[in-house]
Image 1: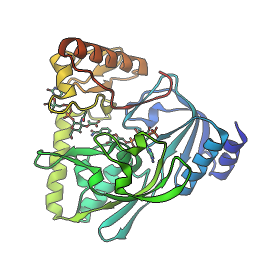
Image 2 (image 1 turned 180 degrees about the horizontal axis):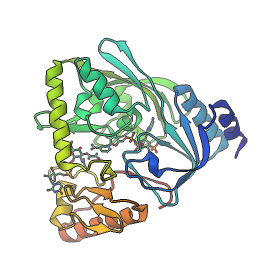
Image 3 (image 1 turned 90 degrees about the vertical axis):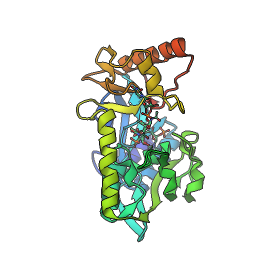
Amino acid sequence: MPHELESLARLLPPGRVARDVPLAPLTTFRIGGPADLLVRVTTADEMVAAIEAVRSAGVPWTILGAGANVLVGDGGVRGVVIRSEIDGIEWVDPLTLRAGAGVRTFPDLTDRTVAAGLAGLHHYVGIPSSVGGALWQNLHFLSPDRSRTCFIEEVVVGADVLTAEGERRRVDGAWFEFGYDDSVLHHSPHVVLTADFRLERAPVAELREVVRANLQWRDDRHPDLWLYPSAGSIFKKIEGIGAGRLIDQCGLKGHVHGAAQIFHKHANIIVNLGGATSAEVHALIDLARETVLRETGYELEVEIGLLGDS
Ligand SMILES: NC(=O)C1=CN([C@@H]2O[C@H](COP(=O)(O)OP(=O)(O)OC[C@H]3O[C@@H](n4cnc5c(N)ncnc54)[C@H](OP(=O)(O)O)[C@@H]3O)[C@@H](O)[C@H]2O)C=CC1
Ligand SMILES: C=C(O[C@H]1[C@H](O)[C@@H](CO)O[C@H](OP(=O)(O)OP(=O)(O)OC[C@H]2O[C@@H](n3ccc(=O)[nH]c3=O)[C@H](O)[C@@H]2O)[C@@H]1NC(C)=O)C(=O)O
C-alpha cells in the first residue's frame, strides 16, 4: 500500500480501511466484485483527508454513496473506493436543513422534514439515495398532481464541497449546473461534503398525503428492493416517448438472462433474481439497446454509473 494510504489508515478508526472488500452488499443491485481498498468516511474532515491521500498517492478513486444508481463490474473496482457515510443533520435556521453527504434522503430527510411540516424533500420518499448521490444526479420525482417533475435543485441553496482542484469551499445551488440526471459532479471530480436545503412550511397532513400517494405510485411500478434488487431506471429518459415503453413494445418485458431479468412490471428496470452477475445485466442492456434500435430507430443511453471491470 502506498505510504499516503498507510497514513490514512492510521488516521481513521480501526476497521475503516480494508482490502478486497466485496462491493455487492453496498449496492442496491447486490452485484459486483471487490474494491482493492475500501475506505469508509463519516465526517467531512475524514473525506478531505481521504481524497488528499488518494490524490497524492496517485491511485484511481471512486466515491460511493447509497450505491443505488450503480452497477459494479464482476471484476470489482481497482484502486480506492471511498464510501461517503458523512453523517449529521442540523438546522441552519427554522427553514434550512444542513445534511452530511452520506445522510439518506429517504428515510432520514423525508421523515425529519415531513414531521416538522416542511415541504420540499417529501417528493423523494421511497427513492434510495445519499445526499451526495442526490446532488450528483439531481434527484427527481413527479409533482403531486403529476403535471411536472420536481427536482432536488429546487431546494438546494448551498453546499460545502471539495473541488477537483483540492479547494474546500462553500458554493451556492447554481454552482451545480443541474440538468435532468445531471450536474457538474458528472463532469469534474468535485466531492460534496454537506448540503443545505431551503424548505417551505406546509400542513403535515398535506405532506403525508403526498408521501402516501408517491409510495403507492412507486409500489405499483418499481421493484421492492428486498425482493428484487435493482438500480432504478437503466436507460435515460426519452422525453415524450419513454425508454421503458420502447423496450416494452419490443416484447422484452420479463425477459430473463441467467439470474437477471427485465422487470415484469417496468421494462426500464433490470432486477437481480438472486446471484445475478454484472455480465448478465450487461447482456440484457445490449439486448435492449440492439432490439430497440433495430425495431424503432431510437438509441437507448445507459443512465446508471458503470463502475470497475465488467
Ligand atoms: N428515481 C428513482 O427511482 C431512482 C433514482 N436514483 C437516483 O440515483 C442517485 C443515487 O444516489 P446514491 O445511491 O447515493 O449514489 P451511488 O452510490 O449510486 O453513487 C453514484 C455516483 O454518485 C456520485 N457521488 C455519490 N456521493 C457523492 C459525493 N458526496 N460527492 C460527489 N459525488 C458523489 C459518485 O460519482 P463519481 O463516481 O463520478 O464520483 C458515484 O459514482 C440519486 O440521485 C437518485 O436520484 C436511484 C434509484 C432510483
Ligand atoms: C427510476 C428512476 O427515475 C424515474 C422516476 O422515478 C419517474 C418519476 O419521476 O420518472 C421516470 O420514470 P418513467 O417510468 O417515466 O420512465 P420511462 O421508463 O422512460 O417510462 C415512460 C413511460 O413509459 C411507459 N412504460 C414504461 C415501462 C413499461 O414497461 N411500459 C410502458 O409502457 C409508461 O407509461 C411510463 O410512464 C424516471 N426514469 C427516467 C429514466 O428518467 C431513476 O432515475 O432511476
